[in-house]
Amino acid sequence: MTTATAELLTVPEVMKRLKLGRSTVYDLIRSRRLVSITVGRSRRVPIDAVRDFIDHQIEEAA
Image (cartoon, rainbow, N blue to C red; front, side, top):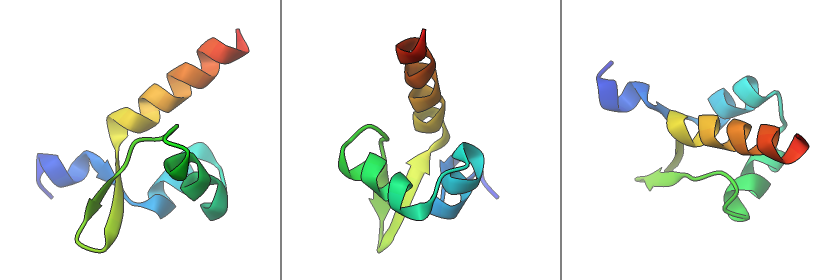
């Protein structure tokens, strides 16, 4: 696995990391609260986008 592919997560991987359902992850992507890219027909989420989302959620909760 190259560095570039290691930094992109699939939707199921994001689901597992955030402990959220598929629909919720796609809603976050649709509402642009979670950044993603399309590679071919596949949706990928940069690992930094997941970290940014978590950091933003923590800031909002404080």
